[in-house]
Image (cartoon, rainbow, N blue to C red; front, side, top):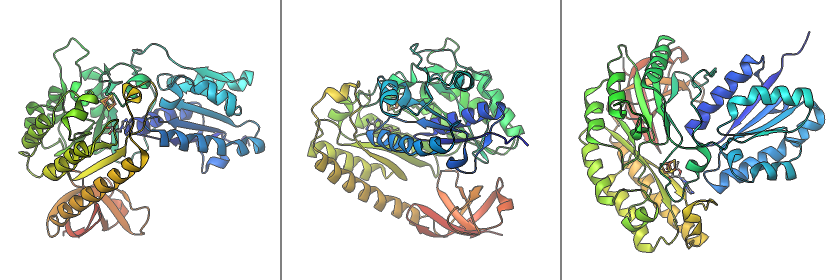
Length: 441
Ligand code: 5AD
Ligand code: SF4
């Protein structure tokens, strides 16, 4: 019997990458590969990479280095490095020089050519690389997708980013902003709901600028409105929003629609106007707080954010502005990052601040946000929340979990047959960021 070939995908970075890996898996499945039980057993290992911070890159190179040993055992093994890190200038050369056992390098705008790349390596046994130079390539609508995200399905609405925040590498590696056609997005959502998915997450670097690049009178609010007209019980989430494009119309639709979750991820990045300007974020602290006031008119809304500390030239006062904004908004959760210098970006040319200061600031910020998250969590105790059951808890046997409409994770003891169902849970306790509860029958 011929052994079926298998693949292992090691994914780094954001949800966009997680979804790209589902497309990579789709290509591999079509080629006759099946998922490997373990990386050591795979016939092809794909690193779907991220370069948003230096820590991600270091980790990825460590993991790539670890696979050299598998090549000694399996001479036919193919190793591929794809995605954002691979798209960066100089990375292909670095890989060829220091990781000569890697067979394929494909940029983030090229991974749909994985099938050709594999065929080339199998026939010629020669290194294959392809890095797209056109920053606005056409959108590929016909890619196979092997979804692995349970009851939740990711749906791209835009690709790339035009904002050029001064710290960020994304516009350089993901190309210019391109919106998918509303018809393609709506058709995909309807198909996924027919297939049984219960939660749709719309993906884009800046979902609020949806269709700004098209001449079609559509915008993000209109897309949400059309989605809200689709029949059936399901949830829609979206990420990421940009404060410069988020508006009242979006707030109104969230309020009116039963299918759009009362959950908004609105990265603020800094509470200091001076730093926001240097970051090229195109809004002020005051504008952001005004938006938060509007969003807070949505009953039970959950607001989360991203914050960077230690941006070049950030002073004690700038950082205090960030802390005071966090106190004022009381985010239900915040993703906090230490600024990481990315070569090629504007901020990389600015005067950097020292490592120790960055470390102290991130610790202070995390402690503050943890306190707030804990306090907000306590308010849920005794309340009944509708949960979409998503998965089993990987750490505790018999425990299943899901999210509230506004995005809070809830664990409870229950039958895994409930996965995919909406259930009412009485919240009994709050542990760090997760809530615990019991079925309310
Ligand atoms: N350093 C630290 N954090 C960054 N982010 C983006 N670029 C950098 C960088 N160079 C953060 C931002 C963004 C999130 C996805 O990653 O907060 O919203
Ligand atoms: Fe990066 Fe800014 Fe674009 Fe987000 S909006 S991907 S932070 S450049």
